[in-house]
Length: 185
Ligand code: IMP
Ligand code: MG
Image (cartoon, rainbow, N blue to C red; front, top):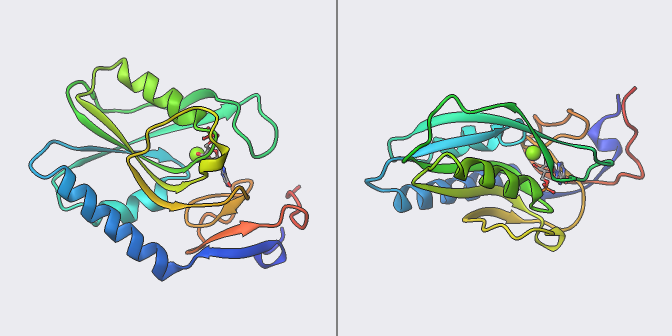
């Protein structure tokens, strides 16, 4: 197994930078949902670290649920938009204000699919909060309500985001040089 130092390109956001932005987002969400019902939905597994930190800055009383999705029929490190539900919500979202928390919006296909699926369950509202937005990669229009950082069209990892299921635990967000990266056996 390689060390991340073998293929890291650059650190995009360091730990204090993430902490500051996550706090700002949590405070903004708290203002926007003041006095309202709120169900935070973490999209596993990439959104796990971000959600755990974000909810500690959401001062509005809220519930938390998780969903796990995966894209399939795709090449390396890109999404085909064919989304499979691995784990569905436990909560009935009818009439609820849902805030989806995700790691990255890239082509937008995953989010567009989740939105379509959740809207059939008659929630009162659905908003999206993403840590990273790769805007220039968008293929499907998705209205993202809260964005942590805009990032370039490069492979990113750390702070919940993996490369082949590794490196999620790193406390910063970095880009990878995929020429130097070797897939584990
Ligand atoms: P989309 O459907 O193309 O928007 O893909 C979004 C999903 O692709 C994200 O939830 C990530 O799981 C994955 N993804 C996109 N870009 C990256 C990246 O740079 N690093 C790791 N995962 C990524
Ligand atoms: Mg994901």
